Length: 336
Image (cartoon, rainbow, N blue to C red; front, top):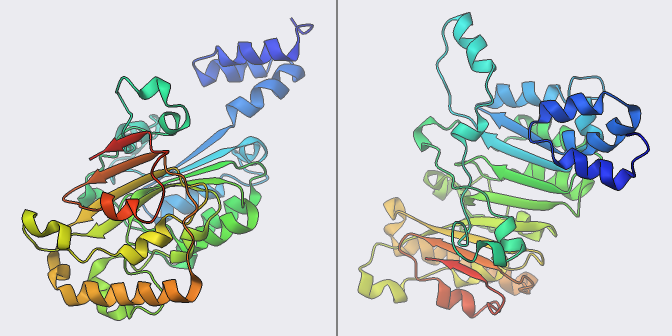
């Protein structure tokens, strides 16, 4: 069997459905290991419940740790939340540790083509989608955007040799500046998928952040919109407290839209409306509009993306506004 062409051996590796079987196969011959290792260690799933679990998981992925092989072969890194489970006895903790709970607790938000007759005909936009994200928000541990909280992941990014894709699936968490800097420095061509809807509205420089502490959007860095590899972006837009008849006249942040569509490789846009709450005062929205307008005058943003998938959730009247700032002729899936 060791005389078989490498291409045929690689195809044999693809036939293994269980990674344990693939691992056993890789240990039978040095040649088989060299072929199977890129498949065995292709993806890293960091399943986090809090800052401590983040540090523990990242600590295993070192040059001398049990996950050292991932540093050489991993091409995809997924950051996801786990539900916080109250485990009391050592027996409970042991049984809990035996199962890979990630797929049971974390489901990704599907793109508009998922489970439709178009799914197998739309190529990359359909292939990029993940299952629907349904984590109960009251059980999510929100990691603050402080540098020290995310430093273990930033350090891990600096150690990975071949990273091609980063999935950020920490619902209720903003994509932190620490990861933005690490990706830009070590993996500038890496595809980045930010699935949770981000508080982009109040991230423009010059906005008096102290007035918006209740928004929960302070962790988002608007420089994230400059990522060359940004492929999927979730955005939260404030819904004004108006009737259905007045929705078209709401003071949407059209100025912000020019920045959202700047990333040249952005393909999938997810927009979700937030409840009015304290933001039902139009004065707050107008102040944000003024800041984005001033920023637009200073940097002259140029829409560069070619969107393929748009998903709109909530009472939104944003599609006509979006069509005025970017060409939507390449959109192949739309969910409203």
